[in-house]
Length: 68
Image (cartoon, rainbow, N blue to C red):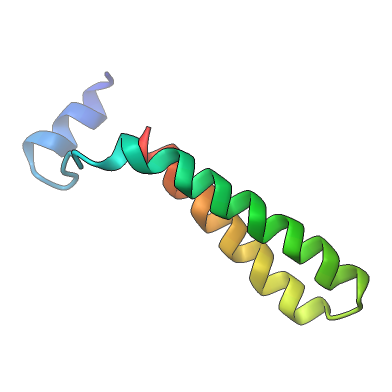
């Protein structure tokens, strides 16, 4: 691990999350589901709602990366 990561752990700026790794698959599935719904919404011409769905897709995939 990097020095910065170790330093953040020591200063308790970040904390290990014991269930994190078990949630990775769920977060990825949710992110990809949101992405697929955003594609359909975009095709229907509802661009504003598609943008919201894309945001949540990225949010869930980013959480999965953090949990790894």
